[in-house]
Length: 245
Image 1: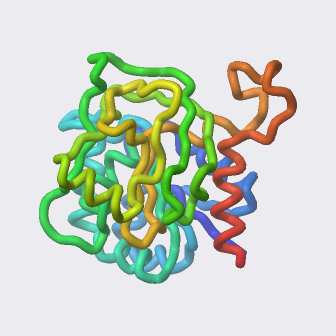
Image 2 (image 1 turned 45 degrees about the vertical axis):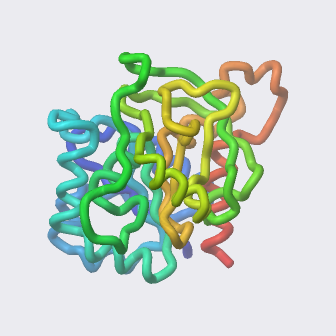
């Protein structure tokens, strides 16, 4: 049995869709409040995949994902690091991506020091809610193969990926830039970056929501696309199949 853990806290709002995505992909999925993990961090050992879902954790009062990130960094950093070292998979979606970045779990969960990248306000200065197309530009990531495309939705106000040029060069050279926007960059992310992974390829953060495309009819142009396999479900099934080997 391959098990997935979706964590929730005050303000997360796509955890149910994420559980549904994992269940449909084949996982045995549990949804736990972060406080239960703090109380019993050894719970991580029961799972093969750990997901931080989207939403507005703690109201994003101190910045998107920052409070939740501090919880992970101060209370659960070592268990998550051990989880990655054990060869398991971690995913952060939208606010979850912001959490992984601001906790220091991306771009390298084993590194010390302040984060070298961040996610900040969209270049448009407003909340963006639209469908986008992504392309995987690296073969390093365990979640998606190089050259694959993914169409799904974004719903964020602080999704612009920024970092110093030298850091971007290093991430691209290492294959850690995994997903890029194609056919338009909705938030002004540098080099069109929509998602990055850690050096192992097992920790992925992305701003778009794959759990929003679990059925062909979810796509706004589904009648024109025909009965295509939904990209988000394909994304989660690929992770399940990898862990099932």
